[in-house]
Length: 240
Image (cartoon, rainbow, N blue to C red; front, side, top):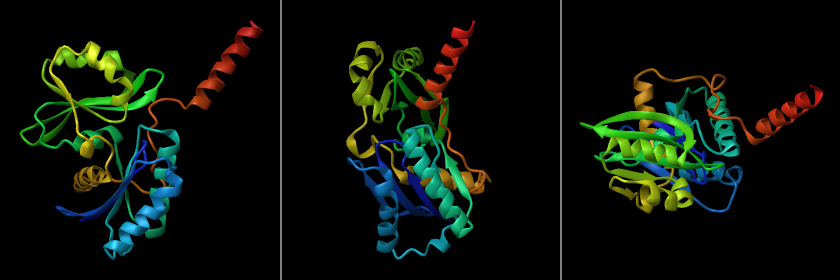
């Protein structure tokens, strides 16, 4: 099985091609460029380096959210365009799940954190039990203090990773009462290779979708939607 995977859900842009148990190529960039500038050139270069015929890909996987609204739209549009052009199925992989999967085999609780602004993170709680990837708390937007207290109640050691860690590290250090540590640089951000491996499991289980069916999971309204709702509330209050 050959999977082309994309992740532009956060600050990182990442493309990977995996075939069965071999990672054929991965191109990951965390720099001050928009994903619309980087994602397709990265895909083109990775495909060129391994002489990939895109028609040989079995499915296209994409980190489907949560994350940056703009990043998710870019990743979704790219995956949908490829799926339509190549007539290939899409695999929607939850962003936070894929981030946690970077730490395959870790015996600690795994808590990825993506900065969701407004003193919240997109996060979840995960663990590997007898080699099986277990989702203990599904991805969601939540206050840092709330997820930290959940981890304190669980009682075991925790590994934190993701771009939310630098933003809220001091708060975590103040709240955490159980042993914890922070993942090192090579596994602490999104990687399309993790999206690809999780996607293979999804394909085997029949959890695929068409390009037309795919839509990202934002998990909460965009800023524009929140501002519009607030403006409507103010208008309604003024009319009363």
